[in-house]
Image (cartoon, rainbow, N blue to C red; front, side):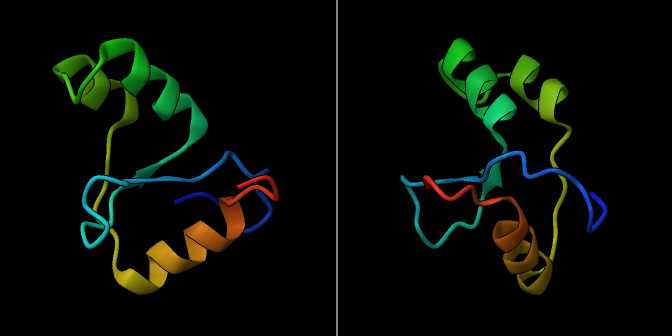
Length: 68
């Protein structure tokens, strides 16, 4: 996982399913938009991982940029 001193990378949450806690950074969002959907290339690019709700909240607070 990203260390506590890491520079924020952005935090994009899944808006189509609000109860499905999926999120990724701005680089992953750019790849998602390039692919148009969750393709194999998208999954290979972001290497998604499952985290608990506490870790999700911590990651969200660290990486949500002020403009979000």
